Image (cartoon, rainbow, N blue to C red; front, side, top):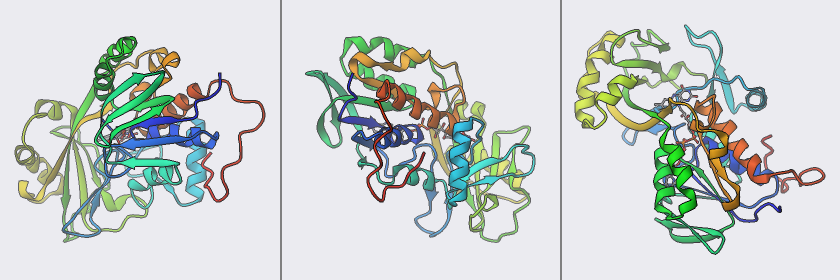
Length: 341
Ligand SMILES: Cc1cc2nc3c(=O)[nH]c(=O)nc-3n(C[C@H](O)[C@H](O)[C@H](O)COP(=O)(O)OP(=O)(O)OC[C@H]3O[C@@H](n4cnc5c(N)ncnc54)[C@H](O)[C@@H]3O)c2cc1C
């Protein structure tokens, strides 16, 4: 079977970007779209409009790597100054961070993609005349010969159901078996510079699961930014609470960790409805339907989970789409294009 010539990837998270770069590096034409303003998905960065330079990595704060393929890539990027290893107190294996900030990883993977469409929210996908079409914020786009969905399972399921394509029901149902835990994140800036007692804390009790001093990560400036991730239990219990209520509930715990009074008004909070995958993954066979040229990828489809799992899932989806590799070496990248792998 010849590889498809037009491919759409919905979701520019780490998995979708890894799939896109792998496919593009094999000479295929890929378009990627995302409803967000920036690529990278949950490997996210929040900046302050009122205080330039202040920023919080309020999604994945850092990530682990153990797969030799991913480690190999990280080591190459480390040599180029794109990522750095971070060994805060209490951690026995280095964590990895993008440099100079979390957004840099999405930017790196997105650089030189054939086409990246940001602020395109897909509302519906349609299978018509042996091709895929999307409907949503950009209007109707298509035809695409193959479609890759890089979405958290609940969002993938909604699109699959809304497609009206009966063959996709099984795939939609498989996604429903996956549990994603939510996470409320709280962000604080303290410009007095006096509260640097910790780099990274994992409190044993209370509503906060993780506290990070942003400046403790390699290559960051020190503007007194802290990020706190609430426990899954707290986040589930208060999932539908208002931001103001969540800030009021978290402020005392933040104050205790910093050893100073922090008011709710000082906290900026963000709700991640689908932060991390917690349950068993569907069998790999559920992740694609080759006869419909439909492929799924994302952290929840890989045993590793997290950023590493997302990247592995993206290259796995690309591998399935490519099928048997063509004879001979892959075509060289267009001149001037960065080689990632
Ligand atoms: C608070 C928090 C803490 C975390 N901590 C860690 C950690 O310590 N270590 C670790 O490894 N990982 C951590 N993670 C998880 C890690 O961020 C994810 O596993 C990884 O980023 C998932 O990447 P992905 O590509 O699978 O999905 P995503 O990043 O979710 O990408 C999906 C993309 O799809 C887009 N999208 C959704 N719906 C639509 C639509 N209808 N139309 C168009 N686009 C759409 C979204 O905007 C998003 O960009 C954390 C995540 C959070 C939120």
